[in-house]
Image 1 (cartoon, helix red, strand yellow):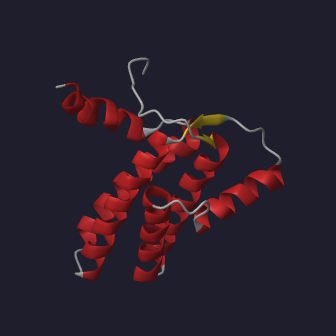
Image 2: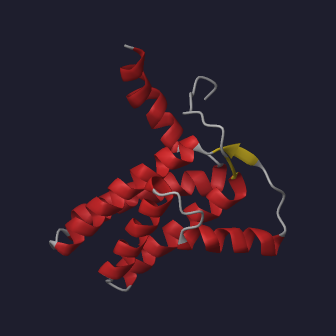
Amino acid sequence: MKNIVCPISDQRVNEQVTRFNAMFAIGILVMAFVFNSVILFVFLMADFFIRAFTTIKFSPISFLSHSLNNTLSLPVKLIDKAPKIFAARLGFLMTTAISGLYIFDLKTASIVISGMLIICASLEFLFAICVGCIIYTYLVLPFYKK
């Protein structure tokens, strides 16, 4: 993991908050399947869009994560924001695919992609492993070096 290269920016975010974001994303995905709710998939897709493509400071999930972090009084651990934006863009693409597949009654395919997203979010939440950084290092960065 020492060879992982993350996109770099001058902006920082609290790692605790990003881990809570992942936890809430997992919960919403599971609830969407349990309650058979396209609205929850679209909500999660919109939340990823806000975090990935806008300058709005807080998405709904991010607001909940900040509130939970403040309530628990966890220490602030600042990390680079760029890989988290990249990961949010991947999350947006995945939730867009999940929503579309679910709407067109391709439930098995939506479950497979949801499973991949849950694995990525679980790694972030439980172990602070950013799959976005790994994908960036091996699939994006080589094209920029040429």
